[in-house]
Length: 185
Image 1 (cartoon, helix red, strand yellow):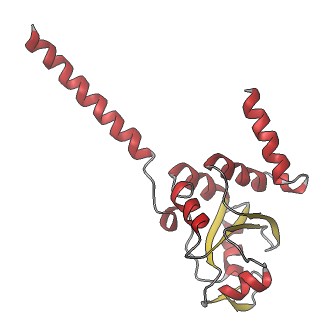
Image 2: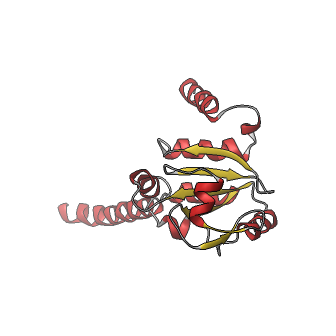
Image 3: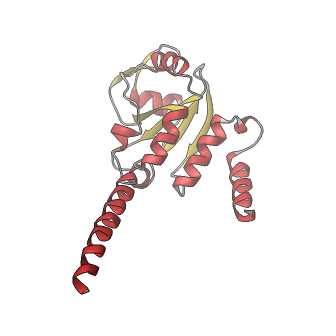
């Protein structure tokens, strides 16, 4: 009798292990530079045309710098999640922007500049991260300074922009309402 129980339990154990591997691989972190951010050739005016063609809601620029611990935390705990990556890619084109970079680039209006000048002189980015959303005409519509507290809050920020809530309220009020809804349910 013992031998037959082992034969029955062995396939069950194999099945359970295979399900857990599949489930865990679905949440395996992925490189944000490969799966979250879109590739850019440094011409934001061309990116506007691409965003329009692809039916995106806006363009998101993640202003960062190498030594920023908060940027690092966003990329290693939030932007590396497959669910977050897919959620944002459906709605936006997203670009990482080095605020200390000397690379030449073209802004939304077609002006040539450097990454550093665009960040510091045009958008007054001093501390990072700064998450800025631009409408499909290149006008900045939302600026969020710092790292979000969680992936959920980061998705709320996406909804805040994509659904146009920024036109009627602040993100702080929007987030407060989302927290109340969550508590009530």
